[in-house]
Image (cartoon, rainbow, N blue to C red; front, side, top):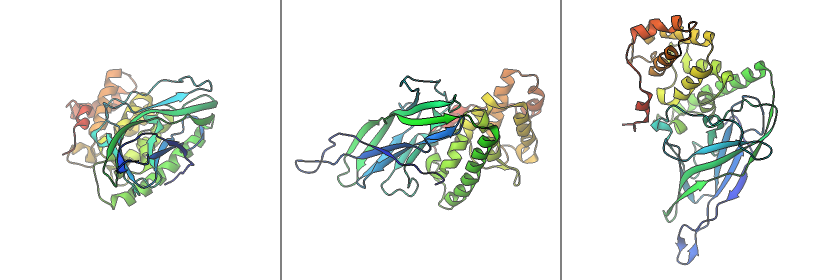
Length: 317
């Protein structure tokens, strides 16, 4: 992992059964921490959940119908800022399992904070709080299962204004780290699970929110050396939504160039093609920006089919 943090440990009190007759099970302990407690405005961070002890496996439910939520609080503990609304929640992101001694999550299960809130904030002190996350805990000895709703204490976050170059360097570091870690994960085989198939750094980039993320997201999406997209549509859909909201004319020009390559023109059977890019262009056309339309119209003429992102919610076969 590229970043670690001390954990605030919370004891969840519940009685799930008995390991022996008349003896209550030892309840699992969950620790919570932000990957960084002091950041540059706009910097992507994670909220880490770590299960203490070695008697439990946990399944975290993050699908479209659950209650997972992260809230930003100001110094007076009042909610601050708007909640991010995702256009779709792919099936590959719905459940994440955290087995004991997990080699996929050796430092805990990390949720990118940008999935729910923006860190583009004025200078100051804030708190990030996990207000709801459904989890199923299994005792590895008795196999008893208990459903819980996790909440964290308020986790302090200091935000200061940095230069655009400082933020670019942060994203560049995440990109380099993510590409290196992903190469290691590829060797373990593909699972169709965005939490285990890709590195924490890659998820932080792909699921980042805000204008500062856009350039690095495009760098991560496409390999200019091989003329192919690095990741599948399930993982990258949140990045395209962010580009739709914050992408500049220059950003769209970069993507239009990719869409003009022969590898993209070969269509769905090519690693150089991505439905999500076509969806982005279709949504940009609806906005009607006269500076953007000439860049995207040639691609939309070649590929007139309508893209429905909700197909990403279908369970994988």
